Image 1 (tube, helix red, strand yellow):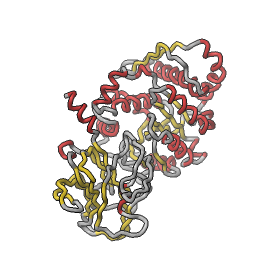
Image 2 (cartoon, rainbow, N blue to C red):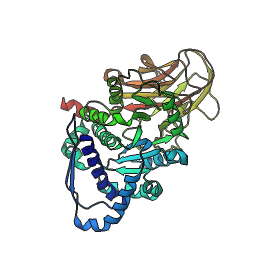
Image 3 (cartoon, rainbow, N blue to C red):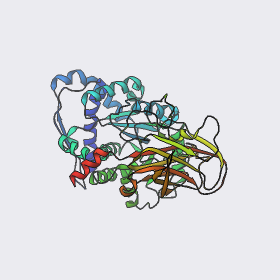
Image 4 (cartoon, helix red, strand yellow):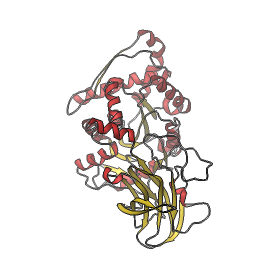
Length: 456
């Protein structure tokens, strides 16, 4: 009984959103929107009064679109994306282009793409819908691409949201955005793949995922990971999505999404992560190239979730060849540093222009698709107390060891203060090529830190 009620509620929510999608119009006023997102057995309720004057222009388009959605078959895979407004507004469009271009016509028959437009500004929402509809009208009309938008009552008041932002808890809204996305996606497909709104996809990723799922049929699993970056490329059984949505709503203020998902996995009895090579998804960061000689510090658009990479110099004792220079490992584009035949003790060090308070460090080595030419044994260290000219850090502390050529480590506050160097150290001789693809650094926002301390 509850399942049928929930299905009817989701359908009614979808109907309201499809009015917005098909006509490319946003109502001037939204009246009496009610949406109580359930926790532990509570039922959702959603009601909406609609201006009768708007119905006449929408009716034919709406009924035609609903008929198409109701007749669509359940697909094998739903790709879910929750998108928020960003300085680089083309990120979501590039992601959708990459998704469909990386999939053959046969693969697309297995695919549904669900995008939650988590915009609070209706004008921006309308513009985003217009741009997507212009580029992807065939996918929308065939039901391969669905757009949804959570009503404002699904969130707390503006004042509460502002307080959370001042305290640095930006992830709380993101967690609720994804809870809504997952609730809607629960019945669309057999499996659910979570992506972000600024990524690139490997060709034929659906076939790769399908093959991996087939090989895992005899082994129970909760989560398969086709990327090691945050929550990007995480595959779930769709039957687990309602429980995951409830879990996110219970703990949305506690931790970011990429830290809640591993907890959910362990609660469902999958103790260890299952990393699936080759990795199929990676971030597409927005940046501006710089004409300055300090090419290790490009000027770029600020992405609230992307790395900061403050101004720095790059030094190394590894062999340097033409084209792929050491500083390219610190840029925010797709260039990289390539070397060969490294020895134990070799290093690549980022020396920051000014000491920084770091919250996270990510080091990526090897090729994107198959992980070749990765550093087999290495570690990342944080350096302090710079001296000399040029400066060099006099003391280092171990941050973490590389696992499959990667480090993605959050930093304890006591360790992250006044960091002057980040050093990648080779721990064993390695014959052949080595690619150091990215060194990404995230800074603590001083204003957020001060605000957080004032709330204590």
